[in-house]
Length: 162
Image: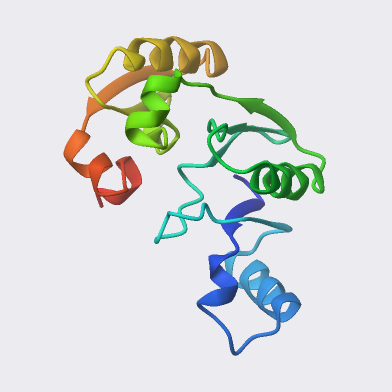
């Protein structure tokens, strides 16, 4: 988002030859950004997706997924990482039955094209809630649901399609 990027800490594991601070500075230089926000990777996400976890709403506000089934320690680490950069946090929530079945909400793994937000959906009752929620959070955007349950089952969504 503009001059900020959010990545998971998996970047450190995948680049063990670099000191953490050195790697952060290198990424900031390459991406020509001022802030690199490192968040903890979800324990069961082998890819280290940040695009399904946290998305910018504006310069100072992020939308985060529902992590209520994660450990308290994990949630604290996530919030601390975001609050360290003085970001306001808006949290999406899901029904317990949805989280028990899917473990994560792919809705945040959307793609913006101009004023259109292409939002992945599952084809479940939770989709209506998510569309309404996104319409309230992004009132200037046209929310277009895209049904891709096969991609979501594999751990990806809209950003995995390219």
